[in-house]
Length: 257
Image 1 (cartoon, one colour):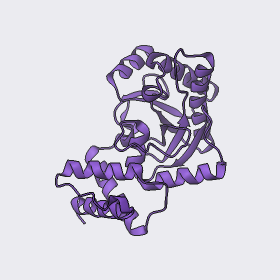
Image 2 (cartoon, helix red, strand yellow):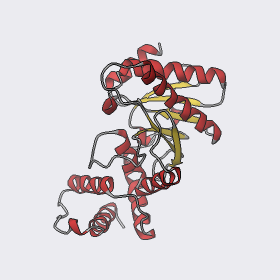
Image 3 (cartoon, one colour):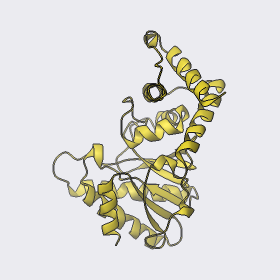
Image 4 (cartoon, one colour):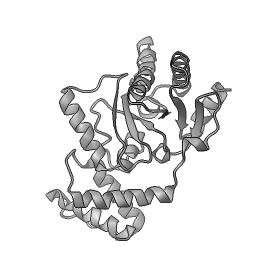
């Protein structure tokens, strides 16, 4: 199969899963087809998929990844020993683990083609990730607590694992408890990574954006918490602060000296 054939196959399969999609016409343009595929994957409930579907999906997503390019932590220059700053798409970073800013349901973003990192990670990983998350949450029996973390496979992402953490949502002034919960996200991820023998972790800007934590304060908490953890656990895990927006890159660059 070519990539175009894989794309058409995946669209046909996903549209056939639900009767309400019967009137949806597959668009002609490649960009609109890709957008439709992402949207269908985003709204698909957690459920197993057939072996044939997964085989085609995985080949398609791996092909897309090759086109986008992969960055290895070995290609980065540390700003401090064991600490890196990198601006780019976290779904192309081949660290041992990347961190996903999840919501308390832990199932990924269900808004079609939404711009959050949770949406991007689940889209690029494939439908297996939502199914694994749903099984974790089913066994847990309740929503994920803020400041805690879970680990999953990464599927079609270039990293080995995804660490999912729920950051605090800010409504008004930032309270002391919000600061402590955000610090808890970073500590929980690092402790979980250490428990699983991981050597490199890439953090996104947890709780900023959709959760409205002020960018600079969030960066200060992230840097201090990671620095304290690395000081107490020397030479255990290398940390990459991954930023996407120019404003966050400028903040981290200034704070890291």
